Length: 67
Image 1 (cartoon, rainbow, N blue to C red):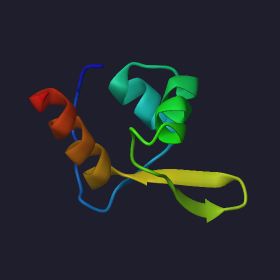
Image 2 (cartoon, rainbow, N blue to C red):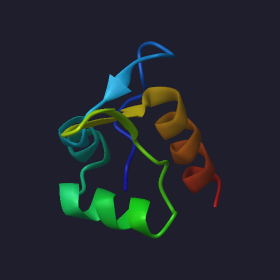
Image 3 (tube, rainbow, N blue to C red):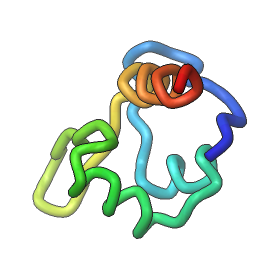
Image 4 (spheres, rainbow, N blue to C red):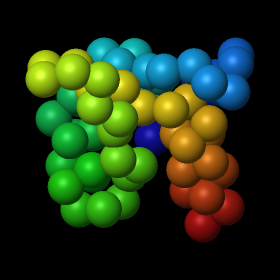
C-alpha cells in the first residue's frame, strides 16, 4: 500500500471508493482488512452507508509506514 495523500480536514469522512483510490487497493481488500481487525472500523451513517474518519485512516497509514 502506498499513501498518495492525507486527509485535508480532521473530520473528513471517506467512502470505501475514496479509500480504494487513496490506498490503491481493491474495495474487497479494505473490507478484508476491516474483518481481520487490521484497518479502522467504519462509521455507520445509515442502513447502507458507511464512512471512515480520515484522521483514523491517517493514523493507520502512519503506523503501517513505521513498520
